[in-house]
Length: 86
Image 1: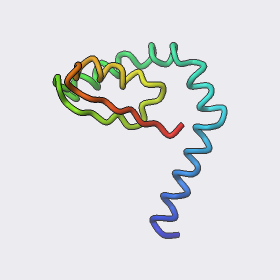
Image 2: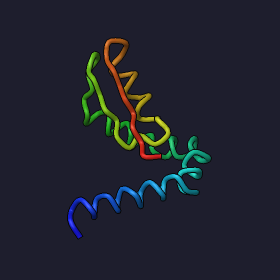
Image 3: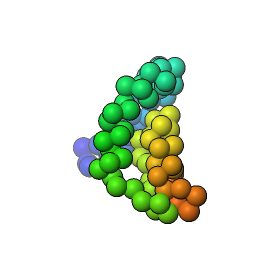
Image 4: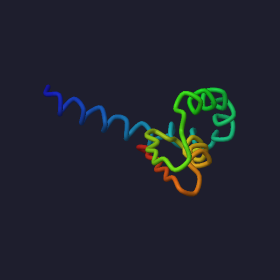
C-alpha cells in the first residue's frame, strides 16, 4: 500500500466515523464535553500565546469551542477559521 493510499483510507475511515453516531454524540454532549475540556483549552490557549490581530487556523475544532475562544483572543482585527471533518 502506498503512502497516498494509506492516508486516503485513514481519511475515509475518519470521515465515516465522525459522520456516524460518534459525531452525533459529540454534538449531543457538546455542553458536557466543552466543560470537561475547559482546563485543557485554557492550557492550550496559554501555550499558543495568541495575540490580537493574528490569523489562526483551528484544525479539528469539533463544535467550535476552541474557535470561539481563539476569536476572543484575536479580536476584531484578527481572523479565525475552524475546520473539522464532520
